[in-house]
Image (tube, rainbow, N blue to C red; front, side, top):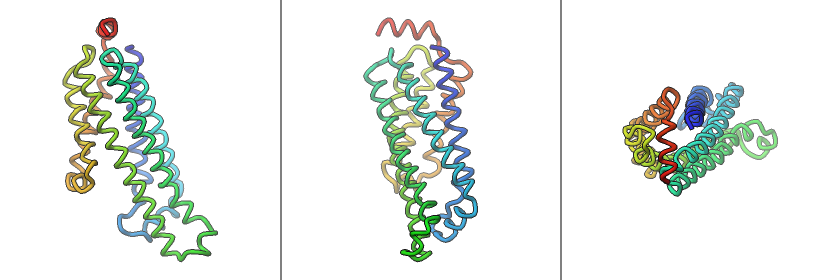
Length: 226
């Protein structure tokens, strides 16, 4: 189980790396409230757009891998809760995947010659920005599911005997941070501080899994009891 724990840490790290790279590439293309500037950025930096899109796909795939490995890791603690946590995570990943479709739409609209004969340039730019906003709202909905996921994983860590309880407490706080997105006005008010617990909690868990893994002996002992 030590190898699976470290593998989960590797996929967690890849999720962070690809997610950050996506923000540094395609994320900077969107200019809030300025449809014309956003459209200009997309068309002028199409390679960055595709790089960010690809990185977000990879981040989602890596998180699915983390989810599968965590389900197996925490089954001895509570099989039912481990399965429920996995379902929350997979729904969050699915919502994120749908959001990516909305993110892909702006480029199709701005590049599609068939649309320019029907809509004015300003209308196409406004549509492109609208799809970006829909993608962002979809991502926020996905974060709510990840909030429940972090809460459950934190509880499972806290109840486990093979990981430090402090990591469980930190992950539960991380979950509460993501759950602020249940209320968009509250999330906007607290941003970016509401995201700090989630980033910190998941980063600490990632580093622990990479550096320390889990205690095989204690995992087997808990598995035998369960």
